Image 1 (cartoon, rainbow, N blue to C red):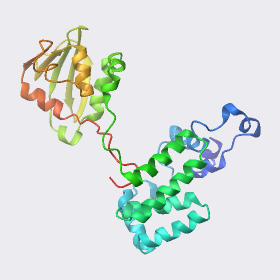
Image 2: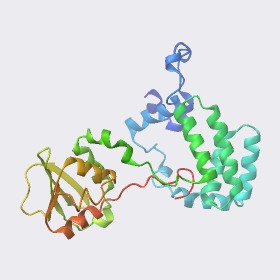
Image 3: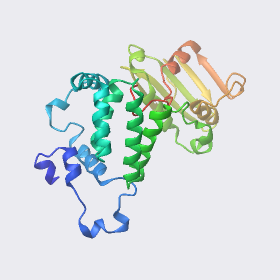
Image 4: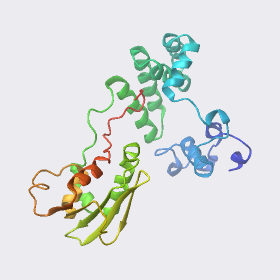
Length: 280
């Protein structure tokens, strides 16, 4: 907070803050999980938000567009790679990574840039005391060489754990997955009843936001879906089959089935396949 009040920006502060010798030499205070530099920036964001006070960071260009323009100024991705190689050979990995990030985002077809960036991330990973940083660097290196994962993490292996999760957490996940642009102007309302646990909820879309509340069914709802919590969890995990839905006596629909389908079709499921170090 002293440095914040003195006007320092988070990335500058991250290199300034050090533990006192009495703590730096203590095993329990080492950066094995989480890095002090990372935590300093997190504390800044907690108190100040994401804006660091520099007006140029209020509305910057998207990374890919910015990278293309940087490469134009540099003279192409080839020159960026050459400068990065020189930095790499000197052990200046932070600068090499910064340059290569521009080269990879601005020219995704440059295999030489990707390979050098992968090697740079490997070196930074091997040098990282924090396991979180090491894993991030090595994951980035693996993606640069082999691409993002072919499939996301399946929830099928977590069914038992999900069964112990309060149903409200699933509604929150549904709200986070609502496709806002597609939901604009839609005003669907659904009564959801969990027949085995005797729970009743109302879910509705208003102003392109999904809301929910626990309570009795509302008469003006587009549809009512009554099912067991087990089937609901399977649906949320993507493991519900025909026997669990169409052929089950434990799932009943009243009202407009079309509106019910439209309601659920507005909720996107995160595929977990997105890249983290290459352009999306």
